[in-house]
Image (cartoon, rainbow, N blue to C red; front, top):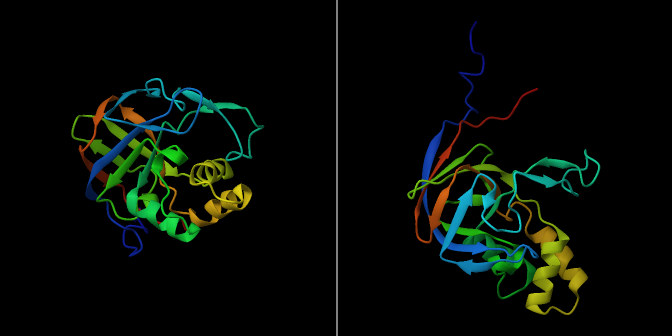
Length: 202
């Protein structure tokens, strides 16, 4: 049978982009706000001892198709951001900066353009042996916005939280899960391998 999609011009081929780790962060068990660290120790449950570690997690507002609190697979082990996208968010909010720690980032990377638009199934190969798999974009939320408001000491925390949700749409970075565990170190090279991409025609 002829593959009707093989000849379509809107199927983008797989490709590779090289980036680098420019910052690593970890969250204590009682808070999603992170602090800088030199390494991340990864297991199949995520970052060892991190707020978001675990093979499973409880559903929340991002999963309205489940009753809130339903136990589900944890595909949100690690939050990755890009410095240029953080600067765009800060500019849109009228702030001098938005630090990655304020919104729970575990990693900041350089060299991968439009990081937040990396497609699901992209594999991130780190030179130390770790592999992470992209689940998708990290949707903005008011909780992170309130964290920014508190730390930037804005006059109206509610307004700042809402501003963040608007300003960070498709700029909030990605969430990934651990495919091959190990240690990630600051300044490591990353080979991002993007799969073939297409729009499902229905």
